[in-house]
Length: 334
Image (cartoon, rainbow, N blue to C red; front, side, top):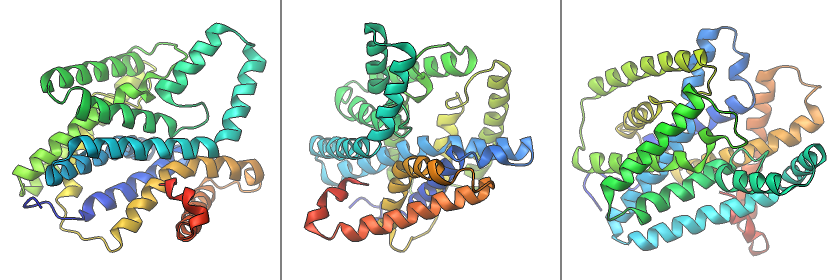
């Protein structure tokens, strides 16, 4: 094992817990219901960091595994298989809503080759419609293959292509938004830059086991203020703020802040699986819940707490059922 690289890094697990809770808050509109614009934008920035932090965490842990065991091809293969199984499992569970959305689209636009092509491209690049987590899984697969397989022997070319693709995503979604059937800000082209960052941060952690925490906190605050300013600029151009130029740097600094926290989280594996399950399941549970009780519960905060409670209940049930062979398919839930 590499010096300075413990088996479980509690700070990363705690960071992912916060990130998962913020994603639920964003999708359940809890953040948008805050009383002031200041608080809304404050929490919106942190919420926008959630998915990049998931990307960076995955890449960091994969780079750590490769460095410890020197089996990059096998490690990448296992990661691809794991994410593919996750994708298929949740694709089936979201199937009803995907079919309903597809039927509605056909009813409105009719059958045509153009609609079929755009639908196929959307599914490939951004995930199926109504399955918000689809783009994250697509981008994770693309990102890991891009960084750890396709451009492994051509580092600078890969970094340049990842950077160019991210710059184009930001320009054509945040600063010069184009009306496309595809949402470039939530597409596979976002994955490579964050997977490169995760790999770079592992290298940094391996060679720099100690940092000046106050300088790191000061840099994070400075970049956070820049991100705040950039959101205002993107809003002026009526752009989307899912991806902005400051976000990769801010996500990296936040990751480092938690990475160097001297924390050991009890039951780390349980919490790590919970964060993955929360991200993958919350939107499905939210859609089911809203179909039955949306108009009966008027408080957004109560809706948020109910969704988080449903996630915890579902995760406990799935974890318990996984012990039985007849329910082994549930092992693909997270």
